[in-house]
Image 1 (cartoon, rainbow, N blue to C red):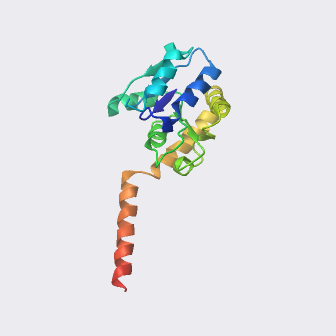
Image 2: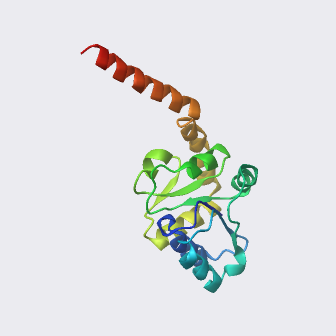
Image 3: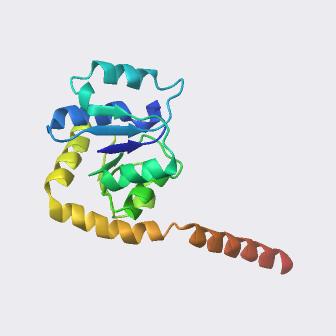
Length: 178
């Protein structure tokens, strides 16, 4: 399983690790791919004390090619943040056919639509259940992967540029008509 993002409290990594510990499926590891900074200390200390610390890998910052490899080889992307302004990792995972478990709060549900398994990020048991369901239900994984292929296309740079241009044109048109 994969977590992508800077290791900080708002990313909710400790609860995701707790869910991973409760899941305790021997064949699964947890990879945390993200930068380490001055807010990472509590997470790093928690990992050092975890009974599953040998199955938790912290990569630090990854180049795009390395991160793409992680997405393609992950069973699940965990994106159970407490706060996100937008959230690119779920869309990147969807583009590479990786199913997503995501927060049901802030902007995340709008970004992922119905293409992710949504959980309460404060509820460790819900996160664990999402992990269990996606690891053990191939029909669910396939369904979310197919939905993800449609969902990520809504947020391409080309679509963003078109919508931005359209907004500028509407503003200019409105100003001209005054």
